Amino acid sequence: MAQFFGHMKEARMQRVEIKDMKAGVFRAMLGFIYTDMVPELERQEGGIIVALHLLAAADMYGLDRLKSMCEDKLCDGTSVETAATALALAEQHCCSKLKARCIELMAASIDKVMETEGYKHVMASSPLVTNDLLRALRGRKN
Image (cartoon, rainbow, N blue to C red):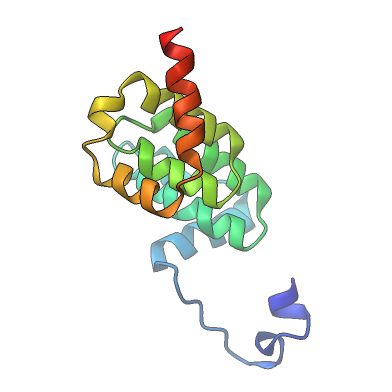
């Protein structure tokens, strides 16, 4: 709202350039705005990748229902290979349900998770989640 109707420069421009978002993600977001559906999330292949990008876009534009739909898709489709990446996204965009799911998945398969690039990234970019992961590991051993 602020970007298009407030005092930001986009409100005065004839054309708005959307940066930091892939065209397919923007198309899916726009489709959701008009139809309240996101068929891209239902794809067997690529649905998780779309959900990762679309969650960030939904958060950026305040589309809470879309954000929730993406979070649900990621909770259902996150694997050992993608858990750390999804955890970083959950931490960045305040998705508590996704964060809990990722930590649970990571704690169950910590050795495999630690081998992924996503794990290295999340430990470097969000070191505070290490505490949550350690708590989950401690709970599994007791």
